[in-house]
Structures are given as structure tokens and as C-alpha cells.
Image (cartoon, rainbow, N blue to C red; front, top):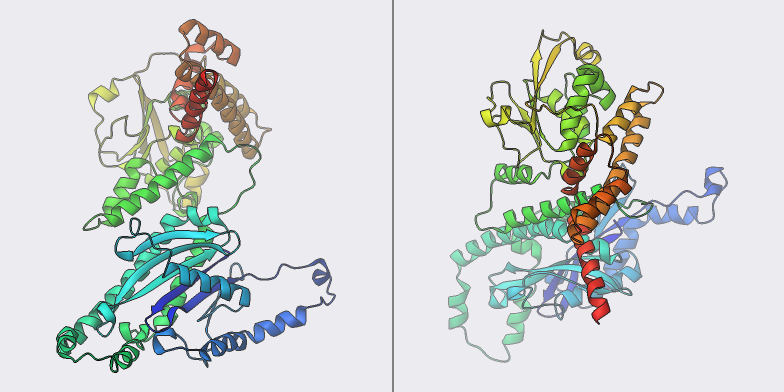
Length: 563
């Protein structure tokens, strides 16, 4: 991430000062001449810069120390070379010292430090002058700042004022990272405050400063000397942490790396798909949920958080890498599942999936059931998926349309007799001697029994299922080609869903007009009933962003003629 993290302090004698700074240095991109082996002008200078990196940081520190500085304004001594960490995956180096290496960054960080500890404080947003705030501009960069106090028995008011700032030129990236930065910076701040509070309590127990100050004689001649003595306490002495700056270097370096890996740029051709919008909305909901857990009084256990995330369906999509690493048989693709179940049973199961009915798998092999759900969930838009991978009790259909159960869980009568559910019982015929054999032939080790109370024929439609079966039965098409074919079919029908939603829900047209639109969309004819059910079910998977945008556009269009 092209950003910089700094710890700032408001000194009672010298004002705002930068104490510690961590920046990321990206490796130079290879040029064509360097790839051919020819010497590149400036390579020697870059090598010299790498070798003299510590000298450069020491020079910056020495230049600052020539000015007015006390112990409270200083972090590392002038002879200290600073801290360096290297990311072996990307080659990025994270450097930490009291000030940035480059003079341009020095002025930017200096201005961010002054503003974070002086004018950029909002009493409404930050009660008691503590808390996060965002400010900045295109010229000097944008700043995420979190101010806080550290207890000090010798300071005026028994506390000193600090802030942690992150400076970046990308405003959108920094704003989108607000929940992540706030959550992890608070952990660092709470660690500093709790450590300093223990030191404060010990010092107050030995010599209570409040009583000393009440009994001391105040005079204008003595007051400056008292302030000078009290202002010279460093953060190291306040926390009694022997490796404080090395610990902060690790925290800031990890923060820069994690924040950079958290959001990545992707080249999108055209507007984002509905799946992309839904995933972004779920990620936002997950971050807000975690912030609520952390901000609640008394906190919450990790099991409660995971349970809440599971109920919201925020664990979709599942981690395919971990699933593939686990031993045992797996469903690798839709074609593989069709071969295992058989063509007729596969069509019946997929029909229930596309219609929005509850799909229940019951068996002892958790990995097999989860892999089957991963394959079947690819048939639906992300917004239509509500999954409980494996449970010890039955969950109602309004909570999930994919449910995995252990073999001893009974199915309620109202579910087994309902036409809106399908049950797949997975029973083991004999134990697997080797995982490779199980992976090659699942049907020889497991028996699959599909049951449903549905009496409607599934051989007519929907049209999407008919086209998908043609692609799956064509052995000349590879698995990747079939996946792309399914993706195109889903996009085609999602576009039809958007048209139907706009026409029926937003405009409020009648049944006759809706039937004409269905004919125009190619949803009538053989399998018309299934096509309509599919469209109505997929309509529930539209993103909130799309619905809100559509309603706003329609209302704006209604107001414009009258205006």
C-alpha cells in the first residue's frame, strides 16, 4: 500500500512532533535494458542508496536533533540505524525511524502531525478529543488520524496527547479502509494505554503527585523549570516497554501490508455484475457487524461472532483452497456430480436448486457435502445463496436453501411432505482404503438417495437447465468451457430478471403486460411455469445497490416533468 504510518506527540514545550514513522519502499520495476544485461544509468546510485539507507535515516534524525528537542520528542537515538523488514513475497521493504527518508514526505508528515494534534479535532465526532478523524487534500495527501491520551503522573493533567496517522494520496482507498484501520489501530492504542496505566498506578502508589502539587509553592520563577522537568519523559519511560519501537515497527509494517492486501484493483470491462455488488455489500455488513461486536460493552466471544456471521450468510463463498486440502472424496465440477448421481437424478436436483427450493444433504462426510454445495451454488446468483454447510439440527427454509445435516438428524414431517424441498441421503457402502481411490470413484463408495414430495415434472424446463444439460453432455467441451457457458447463461437470465423487476415491481404493470414482457424475454413456451418461477426466485438475489439506484432513477424521472 502506498501509504505511511506515523506516531505523533504533542510536547508541552515544543508542540506537535513526529516520534516514529514507518514507510513502504517498493522495489524498482525492471526496465528493458536491465533485462538484456546492459548497465542502466542510476543502478549504482540505487545500490548505494540501499547500502547507505541507515546513514540517510541517521542524517535525517541528526538534522532534527540539532533543533530544540527533549526526551519526550525523541524516539530513537541518532546512532540508531532504524528498523527494516522485507516482504519476501513482494520485495517491499518497510523502514521505520523517527522521520521519513525523503524531504518531501517529511513536510507532508509534519503537516499531518500538526493538524492531527491541533486544528483537526471535532468535539462531536471525537468526544474528549480522542478518536478517529479524516482530513486532507490532493496536494498534501489524505490523513486518517486517531488521537488518544497516555497516562503520565508527572504531566499536566496526568496525561499526554498522542496520535497515530496514516497518510496516503488515494482518498477512496483510505476511506474504504476506515473500519479495518480503526479496528487494528485501536488494538495498538489500547495496548499502549494499558501498559502506561500500570506504570502510572505504580508511580502514584509510591508518590501521589496530586498531593505533592497541592502542597507545593507556586511562583513564576519556578514554574518554567517544573514544566521542563515534567515534559522530558519519553514514551518508553511511560510504558516501561524495553522493545517499544521494535514492537511498533512490527505493528505498523503489518498494518501497511495487510491494508494493501485487503483491497486489490481489478480491471472490469463494463459495469460490475450483481454477484460483485452483493459480495461488496456482504463484506461491508461483515465489517459493520465486527465493529458492533467490538464497540459493545463487555465485548463478545469469538463463537458468538462466527455464529452471527454464519447467520448472515457472510461466509460465502467458501474457502475452496482449504476444502481441496482436506482429505476424502470431493465433487469437482457439475459434470462430475452428474456422473456420480446419474443424469435423471442430477436434473431433478438442479431443478430444485434453480427453483429456490431447500436442498438438504444428509451424511457423515462433511467434506463431500460441502464440495457438493460449492458446485451447486455456482448455479445461482450470489444473492440467492443462503447456506448452512453442516448442522446438528434442522434449519428452516427461510434461513437457508442449502443445508448439510449429520446422518442422525431427523427431517420434520412438514418438510419431508413438502414439494419445496429435496433430500439427498449419502450413505457409505464400504470404507475407503485410500483417498486417491475415493477421489477417482465416489459412486463405488457412497450411495446417493434423492427423495422429494414434488410431483411436478422436471423434464420441460427451465430453459437455462436445458441449455446447461446440452453443454454438460457434450464431451468435447472441457470443464472450463462449461463453466464459462454457465456464467454466460446466468448473466443472460439476470438481465431478464432486471427487466422483469423494473417492469413489474417498479412500474407496477398489470398481468397482461407482464405476459407480453415474458414473451419478449423468451420465457414463454415449453417450461414457461419453470421459467417464471426461476425469474421470481432470482429477483430476490438482486443487490440493494441496484434496487436503490433503480428506485431513485424512477422517482427522479417522475419529478422531472412536474418541475
